[in-house]
Image (tube, rainbow, N blue to C red; front, top):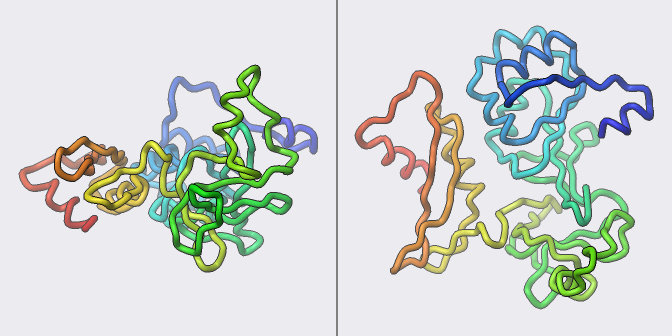
Length: 258
């Protein structure tokens, strides 16, 4: 991304920091009148813990791009309200980069969705037999061979190449669904999806629900082995400053997600 900016003579702003500071991010964008920013989902979620209102009149953002993990509906809406722009989510892998995306300026944007296939790429959600899933049917996100951004193969690992492809489809290892309007929704990695009592649960949707609570700054959900249900959902939450856990607080979170 910096090389593209430099190619077209667009200034690139960097800062030397030890770790991400949400307050510092707001300050940096405000002081230098940043117009276009790339902010990973975790960073955006951390910025929710900061009072953005004191920066509202100073920000001049035109666009925000986000990628690397699922953004979620709640962070999408917060970005609209706090930063004044709809985040453009992007999706790809090292083996085949940037094949799905959204562009608010083009009218391709939806809260909770990755976006739609970038022109020139054929992307689908497929079943284990390689057939394409129906709308709202969960399957694996896959990319058709032939796109110029797809890798040629793993270095000296032909066995890995074989497991990466199913016919003409390159498998991403990510579970997803396509809605009736053609928007892709990320559910979770194949090995992250929680199987509980016969149901397949995506961690992202539970995390998205948890961070709706005013006391929650960050949330992470994993599957915990269970002898009866195979797995149960276990959540880790980081409370915002000014909040302390109390008896029964976890019941509030459970009721939000039921």
